[in-house]
Length: 209
Image 1 (cartoon, rainbow, N blue to C red):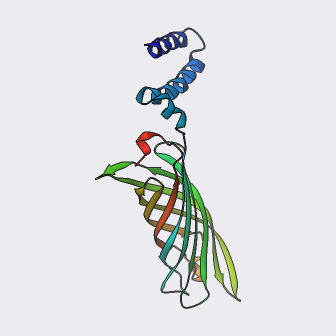
Image 2 (image 1 turned 180 degrees about the vertical axis):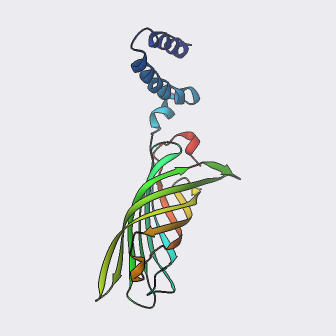
Image 3 (image 1 turned 90 degrees about the vertical axis):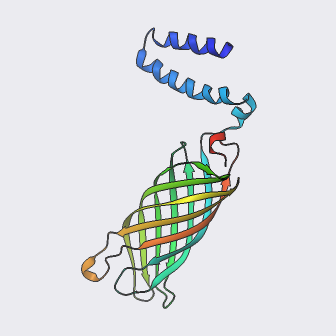
């Protein structure tokens, strides 16, 4: 009852003057109060607005340039921070090596992601899509070390096998803004799997799986 009176008085105040500013304050105020209506004050105090995971795994890709015709594979490292229920950012790193030579591709990327949250048979299921940009390095030892700006699009799913452990499967397409005439029209398609540690720390109940 007390909470209802506070909200009613606040809404009435909102329309007296300075309408735009008070609407913004009202929106922030209500956003803070809604979790308290759904759970105890202790749970509300423990919740936080962001959600973080850091993981590593294995990637395999078609090299997709003239001088390496086989698949390349190697390390995949990623970190996600979701600042909203469905929106966040991701930073990722790949180092993919040619098994038949010392040639490798190395990429550094960062960008935005959109994620959904479901529970199926008690298992947390989090499909996502992402758009990233960054820098790629193509290394030919003793011959050349070439750097290019890159853009990428991808998607995948994180499975919450434990409150603090997520398992990932992902596909990513990269476009290196390289030089087709030199045999370096680099557009690898990358398949990755990974395992991430989820920093739970009291995230909102609807995101706990």
